[in-house]
Amino acid sequence: MEWKVCAASVCGAAHLAADTPCQDAFHWVRTPSLLLAAVCDGAGSARCGGPGAQRVSREFATRLAQEPALATFHGDEIAAQVFALLADIRLGLQREAEEEQGALGDFACTLVAACLFDDHGWLIHLGDGAAAAVVKDRADVVSLPENGEYVNHTWFLTSPDWREHVRITPLHGPVTQIVLMSDGVQPFAMNKGGTQLFGPFIDPVLRFLDGVDETQGSQALSHTLCDPRIDAITGDDKTLLIGIREEYGQDDAPLLV
Image (cartoon, rainbow, N blue to C red; front, side, top):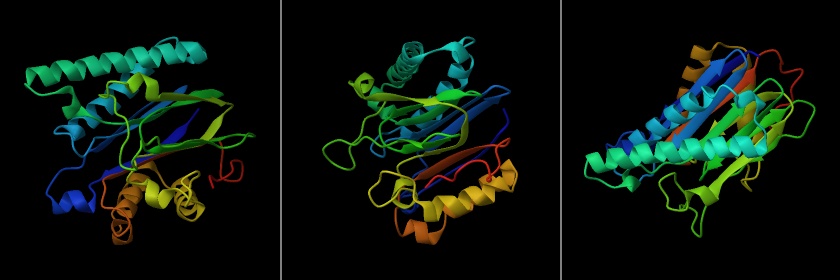
């Protein structure tokens, strides 16, 4: 199983104007049989939202990929593993907060992740942001953002009721394309109803990435996310991670629409 992974995080115009750093982060791990990728968005109101996003994305992807029996897990087993891992990462954040005489909420961040094997996988989601996967010979699968009563309210790993809001979506069959995004990308990468990826944006991106290497692709994503036309749509930080399974060309796999 060969995956090409291109990803970029860029600071939003509002953060640049306020001279605050990007609070998004991503991390991915690739082995001959596994792709594990995570995107995290640090809460804008959190003092250490960016460091929290960096730590959670890195630890989640790295540590879950190290589970030796992961490929054999079924629904209940992957859920148990994910909840145990997130609880331990959360405990680590709590300890760091106490050492710095801060609060757990200082590290508030969301999580959008994908765990993919040759013929199956899962989307793992807590909070806003979105994920989409093309499963060969099956319908596309989309994991939508979860917001509360207000559009700018969501749930974080540091939330007291975080367990109630972790969503694990099974993917049955070989995944050929994966798209993970933070909520700053949603306004232009999702359709008007916010239910599917927006074809006029994502289709040309996928076609371009299919023909370049990871470095070129990641640089192109970064340039795209910094486009002034996008800054006019959203001032938020933006992270976009796209994986293309290279044994399936564009002629074999449908584009996400």
